[in-house]
Image (cartoon, rainbow, N blue to C red; front, side, top):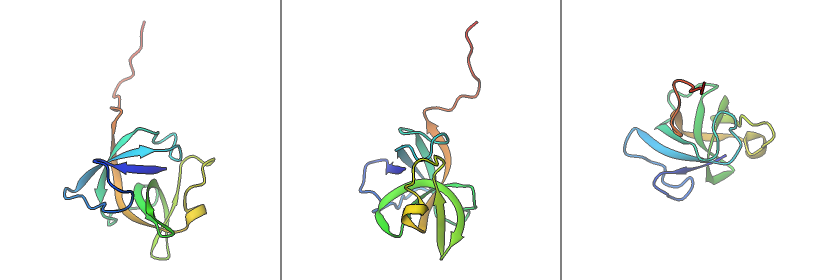
Length: 121
């Protein structure tokens, strides 16, 4: 699943937000059902607090031009082995190998999460 930093900039290049949080737009189906195409998330830059199971923004070493959002699985060879939540899409570490984490997803803010489901009676 590719991601697009907001405002638009080349994928993978220059992902150095000045603020500790940065907005990122998700594109593609590899993180369904956790994240869907068009979701917007907040990313805290750096990889200091990344643990297995966290959703992260990263760059594969074999594809440095591609910024992706995936789930961190384990550390390997000084980087992270990443996997998508959708097992039918294989654009993760199975295809590209180890990745370097650029930040951790801390929240999805669009579409706005619902606190209560609304039912019509």
